[in-house]
Length: 133
Image 1 (tube, rainbow, N blue to C red):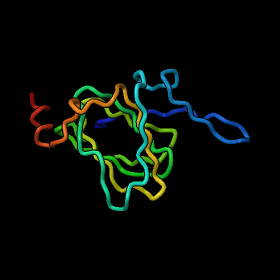
Image 2 (image 1 turned 45 degrees about the horizontal axis):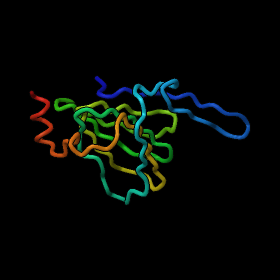
Image 3 (image 1 turned 180 degrees about the vertical axis):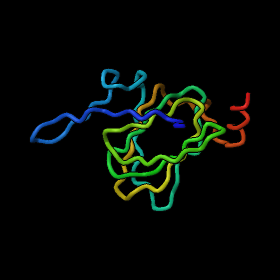
Image 4 (image 1 turned 90 degrees about the vertical axis):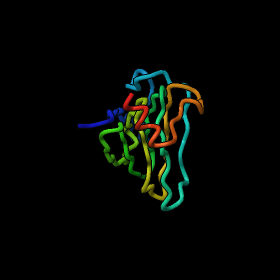
């Protein structure tokens, strides 16, 4: 069973190079209200360790690679992220942790809404309790 949906975006381009478009027309399943980047992560550092109550996200490793753990409260899945044309959907109520970042890893995350601290669940036990409701 897969906890997340993988989104494959077409690689366009010509002899000058490649172009990858990420928008509603190319398959992003929500209106993009926020875009942020994760880069320069130091060796041995893991990130994430939270879930969102309402926010939808789509994470893309545009350079390098990393691994992502996804957890719905019952099933835990480990996914390798290594392609600028493939995004991993992170729906609401999916705990996620990112680790094993390569030196050149740049992750771009598209989000369905603006930053809202009250949407975060940052404690894993609280997350599990929220899932069991």
